[in-house]
Image (cartoon, rainbow over all chains, first blue to last red; front, side):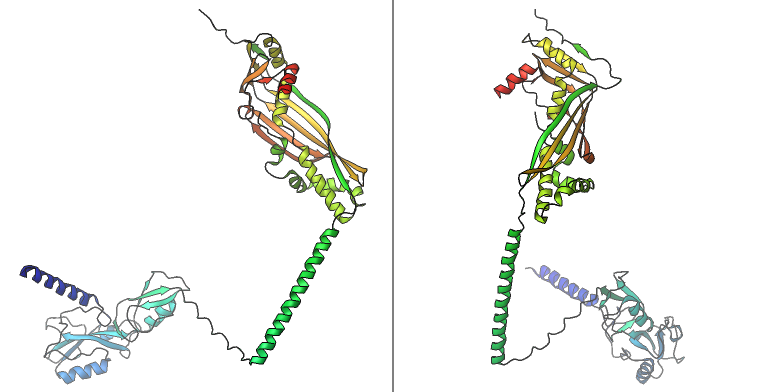
Length: 269
Length: 198
């Protein structure tokens, strides 16, 4: 393997690993925005999963002059989402020029964009309408698979695990037919002692013998009965051809008279 | 000649006894036998009904093609052609038969004997009507050796003591049911000779 080939292989490996990392869902929603995934020494602290009050507290303890920008703005939260139930999904420094949906403080400090979300509820086992209601109570919407699941189908899987932070994007959930309930465990059988078991076995054998005797007796009687079904009378049925008329042939009315023509004779030379 | 029976026309592949017993008119037939049935034990009654229905199958074995050929043997034009061509071994005529109808009626009956004594007679009517379209028959040396045309509409009917039991109509193609081979003898004496040979 040449050095060039080795470099290419290494580059391919790095790209593949990077692709896998990018494809994996980070917390709940894909990372996007003007911040870096890795935090530097000057970056604000991670507020993932904190409520509004704690987020503000943590960020202000980091820098008292911080300008906190919430996305979505706290006054424009989706229906069902409130300042009491939203949590921070991610945060990062933004440039001064970035338009802020809502600036928490007018102070001239570092600007931190905090993307809000909700704690993901557990939808497993819920029907479509129930799942929509549960999500709507948190300002979330449902993205079902299939698009229109049958009424009796329930959620069998959800893209984001329960209690993870999910941003305000449609939440994918898979629906399927409800699983049959597991059969109830068999009731514990009565415990019998050895003498009782022997007695039961003997009784069963006796009963079996009795039934066999009754059945064979019934069969014998049935045979005798069938034998008795022979009629007492001697019955004979004889068939006779009887009177025969015809065949007679008639020309149908309206038919032209019958023509009889000899075929053309062969001419011999 | 391939055999097409009245049984096949009326009942196809079904058992005639069972088919007739399934008709509403069969009850009328049985009620006519009431006088005999009442004197029999229940197993005897069952046997009598089974025997009668089985015997019906034997009454309808009439061969339709035999009736068709029998009618043609009586047809004036074919008979005359047979008479003319018989003396000459090479004599051949083509005869055009216009649409015609061949009918036959059979009145078979069943005698019912109980313990060796005749207790009842059941009469049946078996009617067969064949309407034959225009055809050209070739007669060679008094034998029908070829047929062109002659589509045949067969109507068969079975009744018992004046009560219709079954009736059906089918269409036959003579080319499919007639096996002419060396020809069908049209004159009585030739027929006897042919029968004695076979």
